[in-house]
Image (cartoon, rainbow over all chains, first blue to last red; front, top):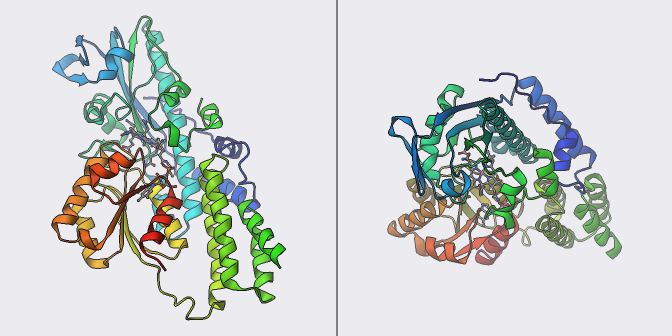
Length: 232
Length: 213
Ligand code: B12
């Protein structure tokens, strides 16, 4: 799997992801962000890793697809979002456990502003890494002479979290140190899993479109045009 | 002096940390009523909360404002006569992200805001087993229990946690608030909680309402 992942986040990326009119322009806020970016670099707190595998679709029906070895994925989203997929790519990405460990340490020590800032940088980093994962999967589809659908993640509307287990297994998460709890939560926490369909004329949707149809949209603190811009 | 009050509110609301601290110090040094000064801080925090809700501010601003409040509170509280502020926590809250969910930053912010507002908070962390909530309630005897969860799946864990609290005979002594994700009145009824909150400010208001100081 690719090792040349770059997650070069800058101070401007972060500040603009929070909205251009953010008032976190106080010298302390900015200084803290710069300090955190430097510490992430020095301490290797972000260790980006991605993995994905491609499988042929053996058969499909309303709300399910079958892959080799009789493994089946179930979701009402499949028919609508991956119509006629010939292959699917199951993928997972993570920034590793070091950053979240540091966030916990700082929270426990009462250094909460630092903890929240680092956590937000971590979230932005996974979003970015997720985009890189999607790009690699798209490139793989092109190499196979097909096009790739947009990204579906278990737990999203219409794609039950119960499908996290098979997806993580198909993506061989263990190869990059990602495993899951009994309820399908990924460890390290700053990880995301995806399913993408390959075929001809696959429907594609961007992160912005995904965001637009998310049920949590109205209340989402990340629902900022700038965030979507940065994530793109 | 009234102008100073307004100025202080503005400094805090506008994230002018150094100016806010300096002005608060000056006001207290020149004999300004510390209780009144804390009132200004609360007013400023409400403005910050509104700006956050409207998307003008993001999480860091909320935290920064909280830190300013804490710093100013630390200056003002020693000047308040003992009977007006007996140094006791406003109340105890046991809180955690329910079993099966790992999204915790929302809960952490709630913890922070409750602490700033004088509550003792026992934070049980993430993916908290039901039994751990029950044990912690027995140990810490909180007035309020907060259940956080961002996944739809978390609603079942919230319901089971509330049921277990009831089965342990502890439900009548506490108020349960839920938050995170898509909580609403239906989820509140489903889980058997007393109330839901959309943000950290709601959590503080609920606790203040239930545990009057
Ligand atoms: C950031 C985020 C992530 C990050 C970081 C997670 C982490 N632990 O650090 C990353 C990208 C890693 C992630 C991954 C995943 N996520 Co996620 N994530 C989010 C996102 C965008 C924001 C959540 C958040 O942290 N908000 C920040 C807080 C501070 O904001 P807030 O909600 O305003 O917080 C306030 C309230 O919640 C309230 N509050 C919170 N707790 C409490 C408690 C009480 C008592 C009260 C009164 C109030 C209260 O007060 C807070 C402060 O004001 C949400 C979308 C959303 N709109 O919520 C999805 C979301 C929660 N994630 C989701 C999913 C599915 C996942 C994944 C399973 C996807 C996947 N297949 O990979 C993974 C699982 C990760 C894992 N480890 O297993 C879904 C859940 C769907 C559902 N309804 O079940 C959501 C809704 C997105 C979506 N629609 O797809 N996620």
